[in-house]
Image (cartoon, rainbow, N blue to C red):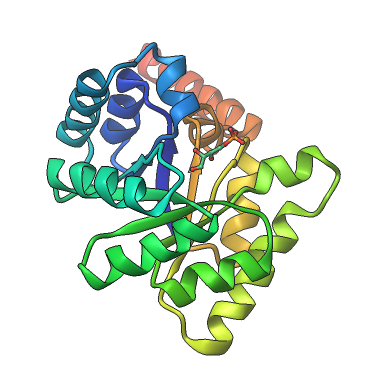
Length: 220
Ligand code: E4P
C-alpha cells in the first residue's frame, strides 16, 4: 500500500520523506489556504517546492468547475512537473475533463467521491486515482470504510486499474483498516502516519533492554 501525506506544509512533507516511507502528497485548496498560500504564482511556486521534496505523485487541485476552465488549469498544472497529478472534482464537467486528460496521458485524481456509483464513473473516465473521503463519511455516522470496500469490489470485478486512494484519513486505525480492505493508497496527516510507530510495549521493552545493557556494562 502506498503512503501519501495530505498537507501543503513543507516541513511535514520533509519529515515524512525523511522517514523513507512516503510515496506522494495530496493537497486541496483548504490545505493551501491553511498554509497561507494564495495568488496564482505563489500556488505554482508552492507546488514546485513540494515536487523538489517528495519522490512520488503530487496531487494539485483545479479551482475551475466548468470543462474549459478545468482543462486550462489542469494543463498548466501538469506542465509544472512530471510528478503532478491533476486533482479534479467529481462533477459532470470533471468527469469529461478526466476523460480528456486520460487520453492525453495526464495523471488525474478524482476527488470528493462519496459513493460507489461516483467511483465507477471516475474509473470509466480513466482516472489514475479515485479519492473516497473516509473520514467525512464517518463524521456523519455513515460507513466510510464500507465505501472503500465497495469500490475495491467494483474495481476488482471489472479489472479497473484506477487506484483506490483512501482520503480524509484521520488517524492510525483508519490507515490499518484501509490496508485490510485493499486500498491502494491512503492519504493522511503526518500525525496519523507517525502514530503507527507507537505501542506502549515497544517503549517498555526498549527501556528494559537499555536498562539491562547498562546494568551489565557497569559491572565490568
Ligand atoms: C483528499 O485528497 C483531501 O485532501 C483530504 O483527504 C480531505 O480530508 P479532510 O476530510 O480531513 O479535510
